[in-house]
Amino acid sequence: MGGSLAGAPKSVSWGKGHTGVVVRGTDGQAWATQMMNGNTWGSWTNLGGSLDSEPSAVAWSGNMTVAVGGTDGAVWMRTYTNSTGNWGNWMNMGGDVRPGMAPDVVAWGNQMEVYYTGRDDTMYRKKATNGQWTASWENMGGNATTKPSGLAWDNGKVDVYGMASDGSTRRCY
Image (spheres, helix red, strand yellow):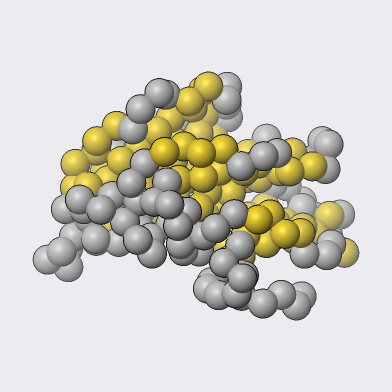
């Protein structure tokens, strides 16, 4: 598949024969490729950005959203819309992401949530319904020292996991 990676790739699928892979390139920017109709990979697309860690991604309603921690400490997001075959612009979500830790994004139906671990070791969340994001980040508490790992299940319930400074698992829901 080629590419020049500076970290682990993130892959998502939004239906039979449709897969997307997003990576942080050695140039510090986000790169993506898609397989359409289950047999042909497209060329790598430079999404730009200035990433501080590997990207996260989620598939929803035939689309793919990428979330990254920028070198400015903010969460940045960009969406690929399958119906048009185009990437939207980067959206600055704000925040104060702990250096080197990517945010995580989960989606179901018309809902999306993005989580990050802050410089203060606290987990934060922003939510969207039908593309309308809450204005501010919600403090979810913490003592987290790792990247959040989120999971949407059972019609909109979300669990997010992380590791605490004592090595234990933390769950936020």
